[in-house]
Length: 487
Ligand code: HEM
Ligand SMILES: *[C@@H]1O[C@H](CO)[C@@H](O)[C@H](O)[C@H]1NC(C)=O
Ligand SMILES: *[C@@H]1O[C@H](CO)[C@@H](O)[C@H](O)[C@H]1NC(C)=O
Image (cartoon, rainbow, N blue to C red; front, side, top):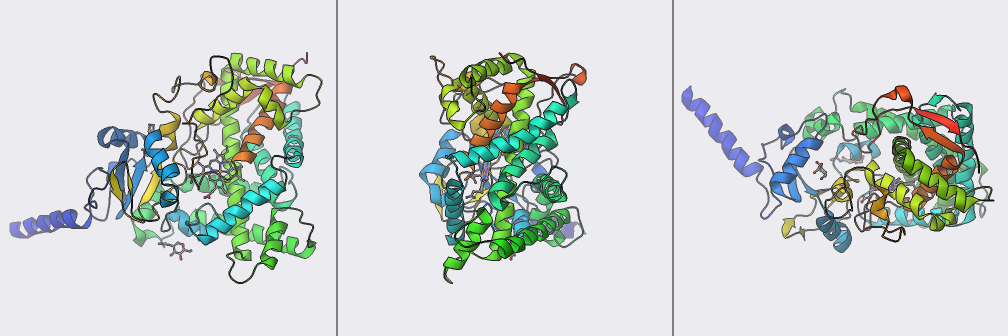
C-alpha cells in the first residue's frame, strides 16, 4: 500500500517536472501544477492583489500558467514599450483558444488574430471613422446633438439626485450607433436596452472567475455553467444586428452611404473573392465596435464625474476656464481644447485614474521573440498591464491620488507624459482613440458649463475602488445636480 502511494507521488512529481516546466529562458513565475497551472495561486474573485505579490517576487516580466497555457505579464513602461512599440508586430497577435474566442467566433477586429482579415478590417474602420467626420465638423455635431439628450435628463433632476450610470452608457452607445447604423435610439428602446445589458454582462463575465475556469478546464466547456450566459448574450445581439443589416441592405443606395454599415456593404460589393470581408464578419464587426466604444467611454465619464464631484475646487477651476474660453459661443468645439490646458489636464488625469481597460486586451506573440532578455515562444499569451504604467512610480509627478498637475508643466501648459497609455500602444492600439477623446472633451465641457455636480450630503465617504472586469467600473453612485448661474 505504502509503495503504491509513494509511486503515485513519484508519478505526480515527474509529471510536474516534465509537463509543466517553463520553456528555456522563459520569464519566471510561481511553480506550475500539472493540468491546473497556477489557478490555485490566484483568488478567483479579485486576483489583483495576488498579481501585485507575484510582480514583487518575480519582477516586471513574469509568467503564469492558465491550465497548460503559459501567459506572460508585462509591467512598467520600459518593458511595455519594448513589446508594444519596438517589437510591434511580434506582439500584435490575439490568443485564439480562450473563452472570449469562443464567444466571438474570431470575427470582427478586436479579438481577430494578427493577419490579413484583422489588417483589412482595422484599416477600413480607421478610414471610415475619418470619412464620417472625425476631425471634421460632422462627428462633433453628432456628439453635441446626443449630449442634448442627457442635458434634458439632467435638467429634469435639478435640485435632486440622479444615478448617472445608465445615462452615460446610453450617450456613448448612441454616438456609436449613429456612426454604425446612422440613427440613434430612444433611451427606453428595447434595441439599446438589450445591447447595453448584454455587453455590460459580458464585460464582467469575460475575465471573471467562470471564464478562468473555462480556460483552465476544457472538459467543463459544454456544461450548463454560468459562462454559457455570454454565448446567449452574443447570440441575442447577433440576431439584432442581423435584423439591422437586412434593413440596410434593403434601403441603401449605392454611392450614398449613410453610415458604417452602408460603407461596408458597398466595399463588399466592390471587392473580389480574395477579400476577407463578408456579411457574417460585418454583424460581429459592428457589435465589436459598438462594444469597444460603449463601456470604455461611459466608464471613463462615470469616473470623471465621480472625481469632479469629490474635488469641487478642480471642478470650479475647469468651469472658470470653460466660461472664459467659450464666452459668447453657443457650444464648445473640439478645437477649443487647445485653449483649455487645465480641462485637458483634468480629462487626461481622469483617464489615468479611471484605468478603464486595466489589462488592455490580451495579446499573443506572433513569432518566437525576446523581451527584456527573456525568450518568448510563438503563441505565448501576453498580458499588457496598463495599470502598471499609468501608476508607475517615477513616471508621474504624483502617481497616487487625483492630480491634474501630472499633465501640466511649470508654465501651466498641457503636456502628455510618455507613460499615458490608457489606449495601449503600437499596431493594436485603440482605433477609437480619436473618437473617444472627442467625446470625453465635448460631453464633459458641455455638462460642466451648464451644471454644478455635487456629491450628495447623505452619500457618505466616496469609495473610489472600482468593480473589477475587462473594463473597470466605479461603484454605483448618485450625483446632485444644480444649475450654474451663467456669468
Ligand atoms: C475612453 C475610451 C476608450 C478606451 C480607454 C479604450 C481602450 C482600448 C484599449 C486598451 C484597447 C486594446 C489595445 C491593445 O490591444 O493593445 C482598445 C482596442 C480597441 N478599441 Fe478602444 N478604447 C476606448 C474607446 C473606443 C471607442 C470609442 C471605439 C470605437 C470606435 C474603440 C474601438 C476599439 C477597437 C475596435 C479596438 C481593437 C483594436 C485592434 O484590436 O486592432 N475604442 N481600446
Ligand atoms: C498590474 O499593475 C498594478 C500596479 O502595479 C498591480 O497592482 C497589479 O497587480 C498588476 N496586475 C498584474 C496582472 O500583474
Ligand atoms: C476559437 O473559435 C473558433 C471559431 O468559433 C473555433 O472554431 C475554435 O475551436 C476556437 N478555439 C478553441 C481552442 O476553442
